Length: 251
Image 1 (cartoon, rainbow, N blue to C red):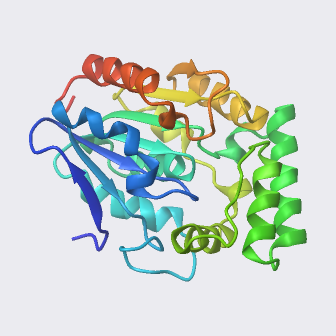
Image 2: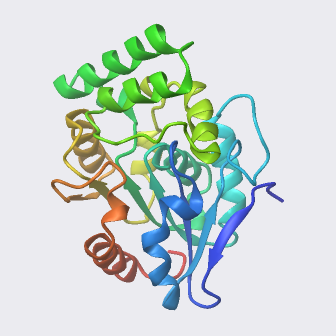
């Protein structure tokens, strides 16, 4: 059994596994989706390194993907935001028979979009930031990271413990290297949805490639934050329609 702790909302309905990204975990990342618990049984795990799940010296998306596969049980819908989207796609490739649908929100699957101008700019920007600021204090590092993504976010000072933990984890990642197995995923039968918010051009390139290659439904909520699910009602309406059309049973 997986060692992950998880938030669980809803007692009845088909399961939906929600995989958080790097700077906001489980309850915080998917707080606006709790309202869906009247129709679905939501499972939002804390990935390794994010309390109260076990700690880790290094974030490993492949190990995280294996953890997520265990949470899928005999079958579930799968949703991942940011790095959680990469984890979700890798999990879906490991166990496609357990996935009823796959939704990803601005996943940094940067290698898959290499060769596209904005993706290449972001790949270089991320690599350069880690080279220059990898040993910097947490506040300096995360501030530069957000600027690289063109994300405007007022950071509290000092960083609260959960956010500081998340930044320490982020420093062990290599987001310019976190590709996903597109050919394997393209061969799977379950429906796929790719969501972006329009704020980071490099992520738009990634979204376009995923939509073309998987193939997937492509939805842009222009002017939304990187964590598009946080816009709440509009995102939830799109997700509900997609989950309903996918069907709540294995294909």
